[in-house]
Amino acid sequence: MANAADRLGNAFAAGSLGGLANGLVVWLFGSWGVTAFLGVALAPALTPAMIYQRMVWGGIWGLLFLLPLFKGSIFWRGLIWSLGPTLVQLWVVFPLKAGKGQMGLELGLLTPLLVVFFNAVWGWMAAVWLKAAGR
Image (cartoon, rainbow, N blue to C red; front, side):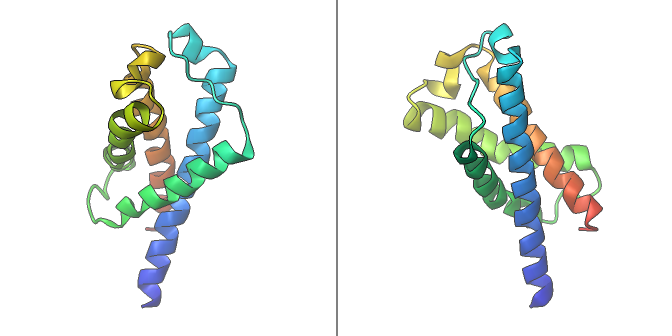
């Protein structure tokens, strides 16, 4: 039982750390003008609420890492599991919650590409953490 609790806690912690990395990268790209340069209106303010939201949801999505798939490659493991939150962001959050159109295209034509990248950062950080923790 303790092993299952450890695995659950490690997966949540890894996802939360990935959420922190995701939030910081999204903020940096916005503050440095990278997203604007790419024609995407995505530049959130660095606030506790923004970081908290990404860390909590990142932790929840981190539970995907409990599935015994893609364990040999940090790159593929992080990228494949990042497709879950990516699809939800593009097909649920942007159009239904934020009113930014399918795939957030009202924010700019490259929005889907940036979302894939930002969520891959989440997945890669989570995968690196789990690898470092021996999971």
